[in-house]
Length: 268
Image 1 (cartoon, rainbow, N blue to C red):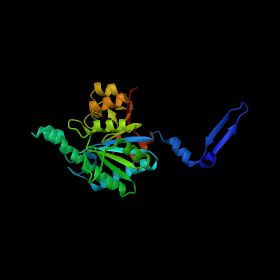
Image 2: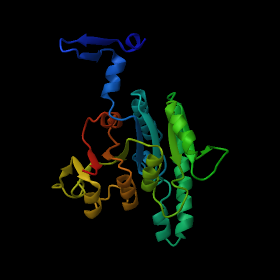
Image 3: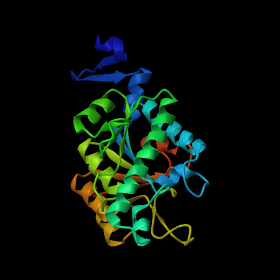
Image 4: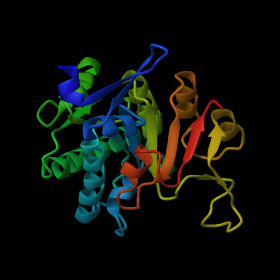
């Protein structure tokens, strides 16, 4: 039965050993997948495209298409997106608003982005669920860990909304937390640049790209990959962080297969 499904060839040798070789396309695809389950973290600014604020429908569709490519590879995907395109809690607090109130407003902005991304994915026939850390039963599911894992096991994309549900915690921390709870193999941090550099490459043309860097170096060099709480949580749970450019069409799928240009943040 196994041989019929995977077209496995058994080659016996004189010393008694047997080498098993899988030759069908399905087995080749399985061999080429470095990850089983990934967390995609991206900022809300990604979804506004060239606009000054809000959502750009073409950009949302393009991001959804990139996610679909990864799902089509057989990789389970969950997503955390920010709300910088709608409201940023820290800037609101800086303008005199109470920080806690500002952060809760930011969480509502995250839900808006999550619903927009869900709609775009479902228009591409990708089954998607939004789970919110703040109960909004009329529009999405509450966050339930076991249910989220079951959704992904069935091939559905799960978008985690409303951050951690608590003020003073960023969506970076929410992504690291959910990735830990979901037993993700990696956190894919989609940014506007193709990895981590010694300095801002847009401001410093001499900035050098890191292919690999440790969590400790990210913290001590203050490289702003993710906030310190998120880095520490990923380090504690030994979850690698892959930083790549989410602006390049199709790059998510390439990096998910360890292709293209990116930076890996890990213990070594």
